[in-house]
Amino acid sequence: MATNRTFTMVKPDAVADGNTGGILQMIQKAGFKIVAMKQTRLSKETAGAFYAVHKERPFYGELVDYMSSGPIVAAILEKNDAVADFRKLIGATDPAKADAGTIRKLYAKSISANAVHGSDSDDNARIEGDFFFSSLERV
Ligand code: UDP
Ligand code: MG
Image (cartoon, rainbow, N blue to C red; front, side):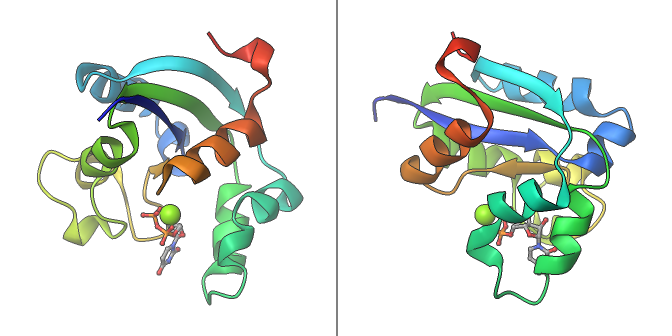
C-alpha cells in the first residue's frame, strides 16, 4: 500500500509517567516518520469534541475527564500502510488483551488509561490531524 499518514496522541497517563520518550522511540524504530508533533493540553470541551463519535458510549464522560486531566503529545506519522501498521504497533484497546511487544502492553495501565491513541481509518487520520495541526506545523 502507498505511503500514508496516521494520527497519534501520547495520552495523559503516559506523559505524566515520563513515557513520552520511550513511546516515541518505539514509534520511530517501527519506521514511522514524524510529520508534525506538539505537547498541548485538551480542555473538557476540546476532548469532548475530539471524541464526539463516542458520545453515546457509557465511558464517554470518564474518557473526556481523563483526556483533559493533563498534557498530551499529539503527532502526525507517515509510513507505508500507516493506519493499519500503527494499530498493530499499539495493540488492543484493553492492555490485558494487547500482544507482547506492543506499546499498550508495555505502557498502558487500563482499558481507559491506555497510553496512546491511534486513528482507525485514513479519513479519521486526516480529520484528527487537522484537529490539532495547521499546514504550517507540518513538514
Ligand atoms: N475506552 C474506555 N473504555 C472502554 C473502551 C474505550 O475508557 O470500554 C477509552 C480508551 O481510552 C480508548 C478510547 O476510549 O482508547 C477510544 O475507544 P476506542 O474503542 O476507539 O479504542 P481505541 O481505538 O483507542 O483502541
Ligand atoms: Mg478508536
